[in-house]
Amino acid sequence: MSEQSELERWIARYLDERRRENVSPHTLRNYGIDLRQFLEYFTPPGATPPALSAFDITAIREWLGDLFSQNLAAVSTRRKLAALRSFFKFLVREGVVERNIPKLMRTPRAPKKLPQVMTAEQTNNLIDAIPGADLERPYPERDLAIFETLYGCGLRVSELCGLDLDDVDFMDRSMRVRGKGRKERLVPFGGKAANAIEAYLAKREPVAATERAVFLNHRGRRLSDRSVRGIVKFYATYLTGDNSLHPHALRHAYATHLLSDGADLRSIQELLGHARLSTTQRYTQVSLEDLMAVYDKAHPKA
Image (tube, rainbow, N blue to C red; front, side, top):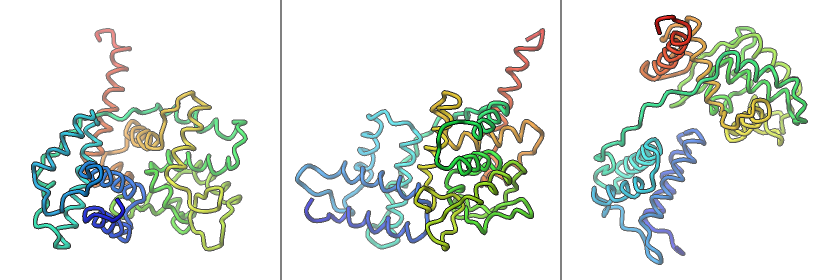
């Protein structure tokens, strides 16, 4: 299209607004992808999409039907619908449309899926193997600190990337973490994480003295969540042969191992930064499955 359509202009304005609200780069990128796909669906070849006021329940239902025909996972469809609802909420606030039409649509139900969790032994074997791995990595101290922080503190990858130097308190062995919705929490860290972070900071090379990010890339700037995923995948592939491991798996392991060793759910909820206890309760199901496996294997009446 040589000239931007009304829908395209308002999507750009919406994304600019979210950027000013300091939403996470990961969320902003996903919402941008989802809304551009929505734009493409309603843009016929050589034509322009309908006016925003023309979108009704039938149009949104048609779009959802197309997503369904692509055999998308329910989680992906839910995210795309959430992006559209947020966009239309913005349009209502700006007086562009009268109603948030996507809000009237039923959210597809996502199947309950238990997180796949490594055992404590598997997790520690992986992390302990990193210092001795002869992989010719440019920043081995940084990589080890990333693993120790992800597992030792249960951080989301975006939280790890968002850490600044002032957030880490070695005296109290705690770090200030900015989670979803920009909510802050204090998370303790242990001796292994402290040693790994201190060893990395001794070799940290920022592009400028004003760079406050803890974890840096090869340019001396803040490391991206995509880069962290690549680092975790690299070590998991070469040390365990499993290329499916991702940073969130270490967060799952952190929570599950705490629960298995006697930590209460409320404490784990605080440590993880979950808004709802029901989210934390997923880990009780994981632990119950582990217990059932032990029972089936060891009890004579199983």
